[in-house]
Length: 119
Image: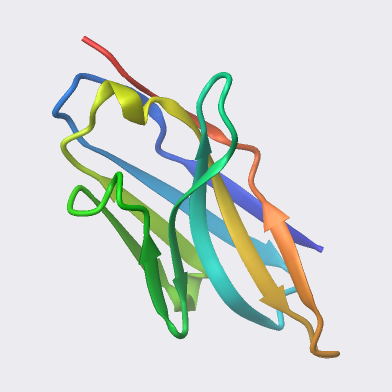
């Protein structure tokens, strides 16, 4: 089993910055994808950014403002969020896809961290 521990959410004024972190631990053979999704009240969960061996994928709505990075030695993914807007307010969820020794993909989600952008 894999555990994900998120940190870094909070309240910030428009134009401000936050950095989210997510550390994966447990029975990990290999990590295929690490990333972030978010869900605002009354809306579906949406992709923010993901990082895989093949490259990164960033939503158009945050491109140029958010940056995803990984520390593979620590099994940790980060999301640097700059120039935050009220519409970025949501619960942000860490996502990790692992590859087992039996070549099976498994998906894991963090508990979510609240990001509120408001003056």
